[in-house]
Length: 268
Length: 275
Image (cartoon, rainbow over all chains, first blue to last red; front, side):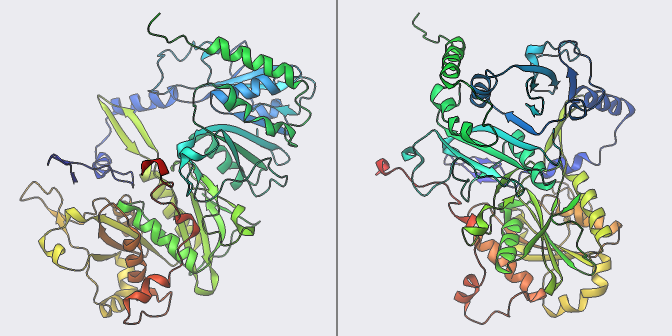
């Protein structure tokens, strides 16, 4: 409990995250109807892997169907724009599947007929070199993850306002032996956003070589300068040879920016 | 599940497992950081689970540039074989799942986590578990307000082995309080408000006959470093991890090594333009 300046007593949020009221739910007996609703919900919330275009489920894991040695994941609009403009516009990439999921936060209610534009994750592989994959962990595979965070998340003894954002930092698993193209993330900084931290944790535990490139930026929406901050990664072993034509990629990126710009001038 | 760093699982038979409960002020977790850092415990594995929010960062106990680049995740296991101590550190909160019954209600994945944890404790052969935790100080009754802020709890199987030692320390056992505070004729039971999974772990250990002790402190949220130092000293009275405290109170804080990850606990530097 905490008192505000106006004298009212409010329940202060606890850093530990747990609320004791939740524990009492355990004692509540589940009726058969509740159980049925819960199971239905669990089925609805399952992540489904679908074959491209036909949208039928993949019976075997993507890895068995498309084994690969390089797996690149982009999370967030700036990282995805970088990957689309620079990497996927060099060479021919073929969509091999997508992952769809639903939870209570989604705006659509129909899970069986989600169109491909609503897929949350699309997997591509490079036609000329099918061992490069945009999505499955095996021992001799290397994983690269790209994502962004807001610069105010970065802890430093200077003020975050004086930092030269956007800038890159990296985190790599024990088994990743190559060097990063930027400094490693200094203590006491951590990464806790679900996809990136989840994938890197998995790789560290199961001894898979993986590296996370984190771009700290002050613009979280799609932004040219933020996307270009990822460029040093193109010279690393993970992505070398995948990008053929950088000037062309920059042009494609600019086009992507203009199509995504929403005119928000309230005076017109 | 426990995943070792090396090729095979280390032998933990007869070891004492120290672990935190994610609780008010994160005191248990801070105390664990002090223990792992001071004793220079080595990482022996991960407790890989989908119950906790994922997080990664570089070695929180780094002392040199050389050892600063080892990746750490949200639940890791450290050991000090010479003292037969094994430590589990938890660095994030339980994932919340929303279920729609006739109305929204939220459940934490804390119960499944407790079950998985205790099943690992049994299978690993650990002799006993000590949980470091905390409880809301504003929930104390009048008697508790006037006494020491430290409390202990022992499961029946633990009581048999350490009761005499605990008695000699003159410690206060956690008192029972009304199960439903607002109702006058409600039954009395052990309540640990703000203690996270402490109560669940304790109850499950009682029923599974696991030797478990809970050591907690009544705290409020804020700068909880002094509370963590207090809790490790309390634990040290029993386990004697470090040499007994002399009468000089200024010595106590300096003998626990503050980990490098405790830098900037209250945020980055301030913009000079503010002044």
